[in-house]
Length: 90
Image (cartoon, rainbow, N blue to C red; front, side, top):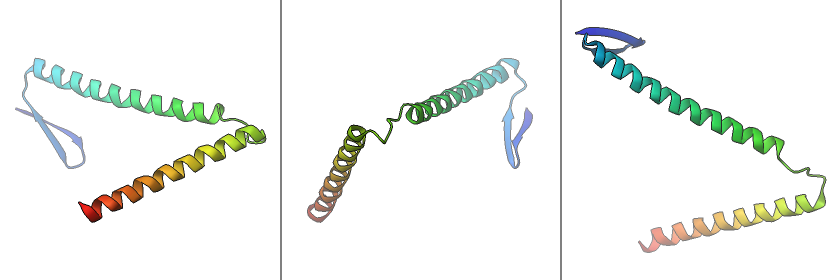
């Protein structure tokens, strides 16, 4: 059995079997690729929000944003009140 040091204090053991090592490496690569793809999508979404954000000097956009914020606050308040009522009566 071989031992591999991956991070300070973390020891990963595996057999000397080349097939097992390749399978473990493939699984690690797929996990990294999935995490990387998630990071890329998150960064692209954040960039799209910044670039696609409407100009706040436009009165219609400002009004629409105020209405959206008001609806979100109302929804959050309703959820909060519902949760409290559920806790009181549940």
